[in-house]
Amino acid sequence: MSSAADKSKNYLNHEKGLWSWLTTLDHKRIGIMYMITVMLFFLIGGIFALLIRFELFSTGGQIVDADGYNRMMTFHGAIMVFMVIIPGIPAFLGNFFLPLHLGAKDVAFPKVNLMSWYCLIIGAAISFFSLFAEKVATGWTFYTPYSISETSNGAILLVLGAFVMGFSSILTGLNFVATTHRLRAPGMGFFQMPLFVWGLYSTAILQIIATPVLAITLLLLAAEKTMGIGFFDPKLGGDPVLFQHFFWFYSHPAVYIMILPAMGIISELITAFSRKVIFGYKAIAFSSVGIAAVSFFVWGHHMFVSGQSQVAGVIFSFLTMLVGVPTAIKTFNWVATMYKGSIQFQSPMLYAMGFLFLFTIGGVTGVMLAVMAVDVHFHDTYFVVAHFHYVMVGGTLMAIMGGIYYWFPKMFGKMYNEFMAQLSFLFIFVGFNVTFFPQFILGAQGMPRRYFDYLPAFEPLNRVSTVGSWLIAIGFLIGLYVIINGLLKGKKAPDNPWGAKTLEWQTSSPPPHTNFHEQPVVTGGPYEFR
Amino acid sequence: MSGHHIIPFSVYRNVLIALLILTVLTVAVAKPVSGFDAGVFNFLIAMGIASVKAGLVLAYFMQLKYDNKLYLAVIVSTVLFLGLLFSVAMIDWATRVPEISTL
Ligand SMILES: [Cu+2]
Image (tube, rainbow over all chains, first blue to last red; front, side):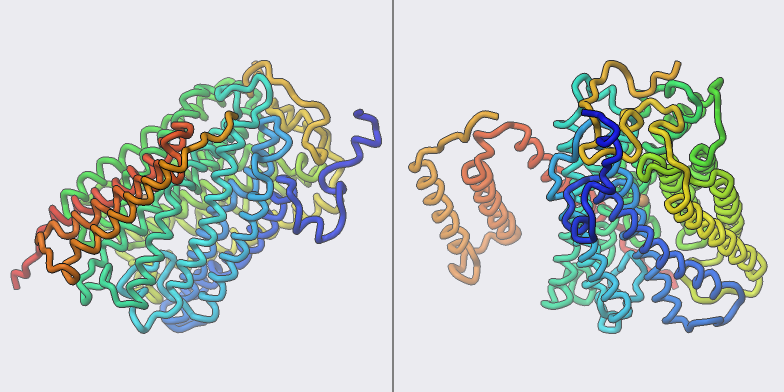
C-alpha cells in the first residue's frame, strides 16, 4: 500500500490541468484556490492602502481629488474586509487543514465546498463592478442616507456582492460544522481536537447565524431605493440609525469571524514552537465559543454617537467590555504555555509573538473605545482606525502569515528560506507599528478618519505613518519572494519539519489525494509534548 | 439514520385547508377589503395569522414535528437571534430622548 511509488503521488500531481483544478472537489485544492484568490485581492487592497497613505503624505491633494479619495477608501475597506480577511483564514487555511486536523479524507460536503469558492468569485465580480463602474464612495459600511441618495449609485450592488460573498462564507461554515461533528478520526472526541478546529467551529457558527442578516439589510435597502418604502430615510418616515443596527448586527460578529480562527492558528503555533502542551486547553476552547456568543450582544458600540439612546448605549458599553474576559483568558494561556517551554524563534513563532504584542494593543484600545465617554471623543478619529488595524492586521494578518509559513512545508512539500522569512517579518512588524502607532496619537489629537485632507499640525505624524506603509509593502514583497522562491527552489520538506503533534504532520508532505495513507487513530490529546 | 416518517395524506389535506382558511382570514381582516379596523392591533393580528401559517408549514410540510429535535433547535435559535436584533433595536427607540435645541 505505502510503497515508494504511492508516496510520490500527492494531491498536487493527482490530476493535471487547469480544468482539474476548477472542478476539483479536493478540499486541499480548493484551499489553494482560495489562497491564490485571497492573495490577489490582498494585493489590490494593499495597493489602494498605499495610495491612501501616499495621498495623506502632505496636506492638500497629491494624486486624487476628494471624491477620488472617498472611492479609494471604499475600495480598500470593502476589498480587505469582504474579500481578504473574512475568507482569509477559514476558507483558505481552514479548508486545507480542518479535515487533516480531524483525520478525515475531506470535508463533509465537497461539492458545496467548491460552490462556496464560486460564490466568492461571483460576489467579488459584482463588488468590483459596483466599485469600478458605479464608483461607490460610501465606505465599506454603506451607511444610509448617503448610500441610498440619488448622488450615490451602486451601493445596493455592493451590498449584493457582499451578500453573495457572505453566502460563500455561510456554505463554508455549514461544511465545517458538519465536518467537525461527523468526520473526526476514531478516538477523537471534542476535547482531543486541535484548538484551530475549535476556532474554526466557533467561527462557523457565527458565519451561519450572522450572515443572513446581511440579506435582510440588502432587501430593505433595495425596497427603499426602488419602491420608496421608508425604512431608513427620515423623509419617508424611516430611521437611519436602524440601518446601523442591521449593518452592525452582522458586521460586528463578522469581526469575530476574522479574529477567532486567527486565535486558533496562534494556539497551534505557540504550542508547537514552545515544544510544550498548551496551557489551559479547555479554557482556550471554551473562550472561543464564549467570544462567539458574546459577539452577538455588542453591535451597538459602533453607534454611541449616532443617535442611539443612552440606555442602549450603556447596555452595549457594558457588554462590549465583557469580550475582554475570554480574550484575556486566551492571551494569558498562551503566555503560560510559553513559560518554561523550549521556545524556538522560527518565522511562524515570530508571527505568533507579533500577534500577541499587536493584538493586545488592539484589544486594550478596544476596551478604551467601549467606554462611552471616551468614545465620544475618539469616535470617527484616527484612534479608531489605528485600533481596528491593530486588531485586523496585527491580529488576523499576522496569524495568516504565521499560518502560511507554518504549513507551507505541508502544503507544498518544500521548505522556504528561513532568513528571508524572518527579514520579511521584521519589515512588516516594524513597518506596521511605524504606520499605525502615530495614528493613535493623531486620533487622540482629533484628526478625523475618512477625510481627504487634514490640518497642517497633523502633517509630521502623517508623514511618519506613510513611510511606515512603505516598510510594510517591502515586507510583503519579501514575503511574496519567500513563497515563490520556496515553491520553485525550496528544499524537499520532511513530513514533520517542526516536530509538531497534530495529525496533519503524520501524513506525507504534500499529503496524498485522500489525506492519509492509513486511517489515523487518535489515542491522546492533540499536543502531547511533555 | 432512520427512514422517512410517512405522514398520512389526511394530515397534509387538513393543514392545507387550515392554511387556506387563514389566508381568507388575513384578507377578511384587512381594512381596505372589509373595513375591519382594530387600530394598532391591525398589524399584530396580521402578523399573528402569518406566524401561525409559517408554524404550520414548518411543522408539517417541512416535517419538523417528526424530525430530529436538533433541527427544531436550529430553527428556534435563528428566530431567537432575529428577536434579539428586533428587541434591542426597540429598546433603543423606546428610550430615545428627543434632543431639543437650546439655542
Ligand atoms: Cu464591533
